[in-house]
Length: 59
Image 1 (tube, helix red, strand yellow):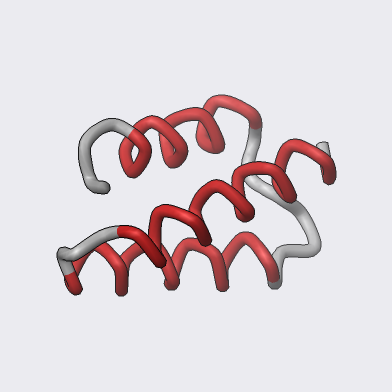
Image 2: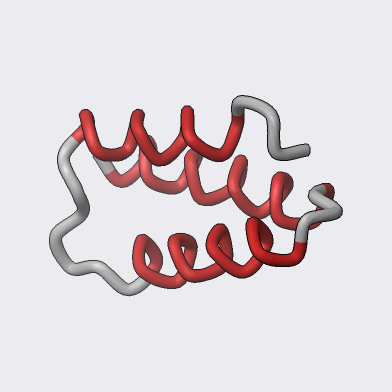
């Protein structure tokens, strides 16, 4: 699970750096912080929802 979380965090970091929308960027950075500080990560379904939400058309 740690690898999946790390991969999603890396994808979200790329999205945050590429997006022009500052609100989306702020939201992505909050999610990265939350995922980075978790002792118990969200389940796989929640990780997929997070990834899909920000990877769809927010670049």
